[in-house]
Image (cartoon, rainbow, N blue to C red; front, side, top):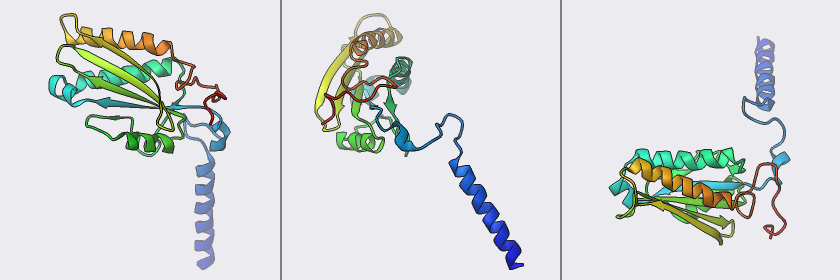
Length: 187
């Protein structure tokens, strides 16, 4: 009886070991260190208190989705928070927390995007890029105050933000998939 239980236990253990070495759909097989040379940016989208008061969460969600979809379409290498998928907040989040998440995600830079609703504009988005020493590398802004609706403001603002980000993609802070970290960034 003990021998049979021991054999069943070893069979289960070997099955678990085999399962843990297989890649799930969408995962790369191999060692995690294989892509360690890939520079990646951790993207965090923050909703301001003014946006909470003067707009709705749907606009924030659309703006956030647009940022991630746009960067992915441009093949920007994005670091992912594997622990909890934390990539946005609708209430103030300390920058120290954002950088801690970025470090855990093995990012080489942080793109901190703020979604705001100033009193005289439909929408304002500010993207600040930082190195992992918390030094700001650059900042771009886009906003819209014209038009008859907030939907128009979102469309105009994201289009302007895309134009500004296009100038930065593949350069300091916004690495492209497959590109290793530039020597000038390593310190």
